[in-house]
Amino acid sequence: MKQSIVTLDMEGVLTPEIWIAVAERTGIAELRRTTREEPDYDKLMQARIAILAHHGVTLSKIQEVIGGLAPLPGAVDFLDALRTRTQVVILSDTFEQFAQPLMRQMKWPALFCHRLVVEHDRITGYELRMPDQKRAAVRALQALNYQVIAAGDSFNDTTMLAQADHGFLFHAPAAIVEQFPQFPAFDDYGALLTALHGKL
Image 1 (spheres, rainbow, N blue to C red):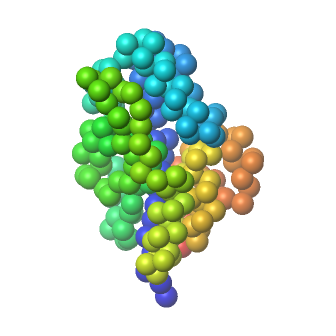
Image 2 (image 1 turned 45 degrees about the vertical axis):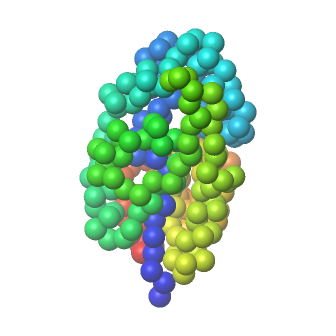
């Protein structure tokens, strides 16, 4: 029997949505849009960068907001329990410059994500680690002879879930649950943990 590894999305699954938190703190409603509403990640990011520039929002300001965030209630206990049974990798479309305060609170799980281009504290662009990195990471882990079990909540997680040996939706909006009925959907960490353990 193959060894197993679990891959999880970060925002919406383990942590609050960073851009929504920034939108709430700055009062810029347009920043509330996430991959749950906009499947085209480049289109979403270009719009965000333009909005930040228009409103003069710096990286430091965003990091200050992130510094005040905590993982979702129950997320740390869920992650701790899961990591006693198997290795866990966080596959996220967040950025190195955003994730650190939250990773610290979750005891530094492995994180694969992207990187922002920053000039004089202004976000001017972003560098994808690679296109469709979540699916590529799952495929690479499978090539290393792992069974991969994945969970996520958004459009940009569905290629990861489809590539994985077993995929689950967690905290996903009704529209996504409806559109992807092949993935069992959960809203409770206990139920997700039981489902993941059942596949290990």
